Length: 305
Image 1 (tube, one colour):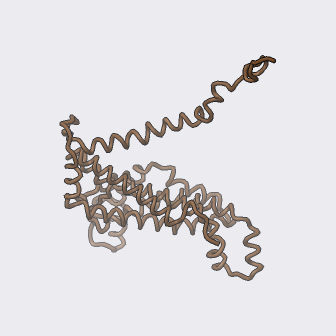
Image 2 (cartoon, one colour; image 1 turned 90 degrees about the vertical axis):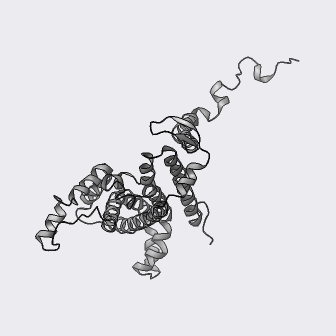
Image 3 (tube, rainbow, N blue to C red; image 1 turned 180 degrees about the vertical axis):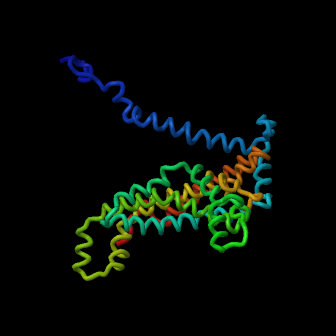
């Protein structure tokens, strides 16, 4: 009787080299990209926050937790954090409400629907910086079209510095942020609406439910996955928003119109280590915010029936 194992008999071959690696050849490049693009910068960011770095970029040794102490003792930090929270809540909430209405509108058939759908893409396709600068020119105190029109109509007595006063700069920057966030959110919700079977609405009509009851009891619950996707992506994007604020006010005067992301960039010119510490705090806030939101929304859990 031959003692040769079946794995080494003529005509039989063992697993090939790629087969032994399993899914690694497929997920390896993506994993490497994540390490290089995400994990390595995070590591460098945390490491830098514990270093003394000169304005010219030379490392002068360890700073311990001094940069974090300086950051939390900065008198501007509390107001910046409050402004960031208000900025995020107002922009995301307004975007979601308007996008729900637009998605519901675009889900109906009406003349010119295709043209309006295409038109909605324009703010999304344009550069954020280009859009923000366009609005900045429009709001310019001396040559802005808004001041010119309002003065001609007798609505104001003289030119107004819309972006120089935080009380008017914040609403305008929020308007721009909502304007550029609407296309993605609307199309996400529209895609969710189009996955809802028409039979569900027909059954609801047979049961005698009115339009408002149908929307609350059928449309919104079935739209929940799309709502969560739009909400999470908007939370991350708006919280980390930089181009709009920096292009329109640079966070000024001082840090009165700065969010934590803009404040982090302002600190860069004075202290790189402190700016890195602000980056770590900002990154932590984003992670905590998203985790809490997903937990509250029960992203991975089915609703109790």
